[in-house]
Amino acid sequence: MEKLDSYKVDLKGMSEGTVSYSWHVDDDFFSAVQGPEIQQGQLDVALRVKRTAGAYELVFQLDGTVKVLCDRCLDLMDCPICAEHVLRAKLGDEFVDDGDLIVVPEDDGMLNVAWNIYEFAALEIPLRHVHPDGACSKQMSATLDSLTPAEEEEKPIDPRWSELKKVLDNNKK
Image (cartoon, rainbow, N blue to C red; front, side):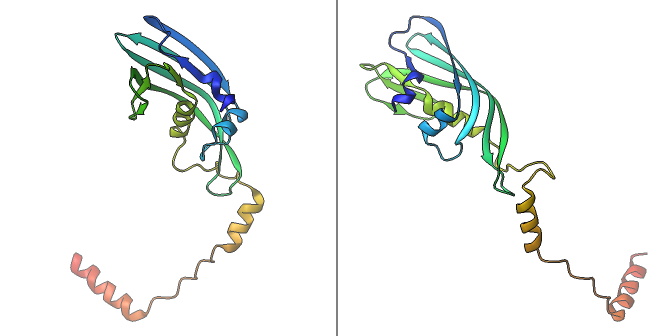
């Protein structure tokens, strides 16, 4: 986790007002976080921390791209990320992460936002991610096409059904 120490924010030592941080996260960051969704990417992260009477508002701005596997051909593809997320924090007795509110132990006062950056990037990945038509791996596309069952030829309709259809059509008029 030493690689992620640069993502610590000192809440306890912060005075009233706003403090800004910025990072460029890359493949090293994603491998250090060891999250399941993203292993590669290039993101610029801007963080504004605003302290008000005992509470902190953290506003994350993420811009860049991450690499995810295409659902169709399993090759890596770029997924653009442009998002803003807000997180609230306060100092308390013990660490609690309750979704939108994080309680940081007052005796430590440091909040490592590396995992939050990762989660916010992962939230921006669409449920279905596929290359545009024609951009998938040619080899995988050929393999998928060879495994797709051929369409059955349309069999002629039994003439008795054709006659019954005529009766139905006449009744509708």
